Image (cartoon, rainbow, N blue to C red; front, side, top):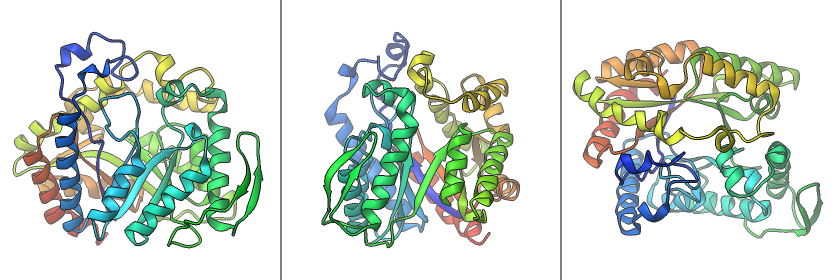
Length: 377
């Protein structure tokens, strides 16, 4: 099993009581609480942590992108990926990823991703996402068109990478007289494509039809198995065979010398489960953003008890948070690997106010005690 280190590059440098005054930390929490000089120091430490993961032999380093929120400073994931492409040497650079529906120029996006692949020497894994409802609202995009913009943007990027230019593109949402970028990826015919999901059956099925790797993000295990099953059925219908390489799972994880130490640090992940996703429904899921089928699965997830109301012990019991000594973590990961049959684990190893020293210890213990074992599975 392959493992990918992940941090959202959070900015939790403000009093929590100030954030509580607003409907949501996303969109409405004033950016006057952001200090660029503080952020400069945070970026340096987060990149140092990624470099350490690369040195320890992690298979990849994952980056994501969000907007209008202190939970993620990566407002442009490709910029951070370009930095990692230069300062790391071995790990894949996994982007989960670029929010396709909010891009008005897929050709430029194809060029940027090609640059990352070239600078890194062919280490890019290009993840494509629909984005949260917040991104749709903040960019003034019609949520009804989110999926069709996602699919057309994807189609144009793939043609840009695989078809010699110049050619013309006339679509519903994108029109280009000339597509002929000079920059193309090292990996041919194109870098690997990954897609994350939480509840949308259409995303799982679309990923299966294309044979892309599908990664479940903090989903209940029963829901995860259901989504993986939808992927497999769609892949089979398209004449493809679903294999472990097609599946990944993201969970929050802390490895400590003792269970008590691990619990203390792992509690920082609660910020991700609750405060950063708090907000009105029209922010998170504007009308038209989800299909009826996707809404049904999301409702069933809520029926299982939302993450933001689960206790710390429940989050551990439900495998949203895995923490403990190396032996304890290995035991839990072995169970997940056996049950879900995935080849890829996204190791969410830092969040909220978890300090640099604690984060480096987590990366170190996982990289030295856990990673060599699971890479043999």
